[in-house]
Length: 490
Ligand SMILES: NC(=[NH2+])NCCC[C@H](N)C(=O)O
Image (cartoon, rainbow, N blue to C red; front, top):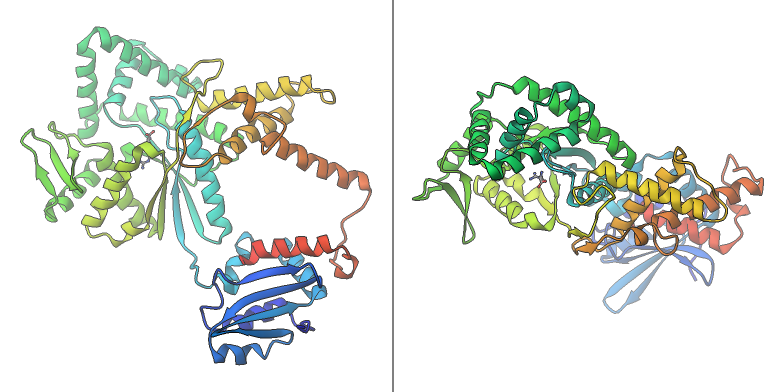
């Protein structure tokens, strides 16, 4: 029967553990358990050397069981010390608290760049961007609660012939700057659609678009300043919508930021490493496995991938990141394989820190405004449907200005996505997303409200200090142990 650790703070236990053989701590086999039979809190871990066993003798309440060649230690923690220490730590410490526990001694605090959302300004914000936004935000939150230094980037697409087309569309529609300022995402999109429609009738439009794009690439595009304004309007509008989702970016980058100078230095680097091959058709390609991947087109203009190489280099120069995570749909798998391969070929060891966090497609999402959806429309529709639903239910009556419909709608959209298998495609269904039963956002909010109202109606006030002797129910100790497991990562 193990003794209890009397007058021994859990942090002191960590301190002793910190000096044990590294294999014992930070190992997945180390666990914190609530022993239902004797109601004790126990720390279990393997010990692998006689030095460890000696060190453990310093901890009162520790016991070593030998099982053949291996040995296992059990340290029984005193409840009256353990409970307040966990409760106080969890309340007062910053989010990165558990990275300081010895269980995480092998985890180094890293600089992590997470690039997510990344819509294109000419095209609608499609469901892939919505998934990227939800998953990317989740991954960023997770990384920062692990104690990492997280930097969130939104890499907006504003490059390629499509932007030449968008410019032609603005000319054709004689769109004024005021119209764009009032409704940037919608108006830019409509101009792009207009140009595409006209291009079907008149091939001259496409060559005009190519010409404009070439000017953009060569740095002699006449309307650079005007475009700068459009970008700012777009960001302001996007920010309002991200705000509804609780998403904030540290940085907005545009594909166009990686200009001629960055691109030519990438090309020179590739040439220097003999990685660039000239195809008979004038394209310049790099071998990735058995594929030839184009980096420079025959007219000398560059591609999405070329910009990504320049952007990754720029990000490393700026942030010296340990990890760079790209949260982008499965369909771009080959693109990121090529990106990593090229950076590795260019002898950048930091490319090992690049990961493509992929996810499956969403099918069947449409709103009352049609298939070509903007993020704003999705959230508006979720809010509208939540309002209707709430008004149908017996107890509640919600007006369109009520915040709860907004919160319910947003929760439904987020939870509906997070509960899917990440890499699988799924079909979006408004009914399922908004349902009250099962693991839905509405259910989550409902449960939270129930708990809040139970607390309010109980008339009890939270105590200023945690007094563990009052927690006589075993469920309470089990819950605190569970919280500690989360925070100490065991
Ligand atoms: N660094 C990147 N390539 N990120 C992904 C960008 C996604 C791109 N804007 C698209 O909508 O397809």
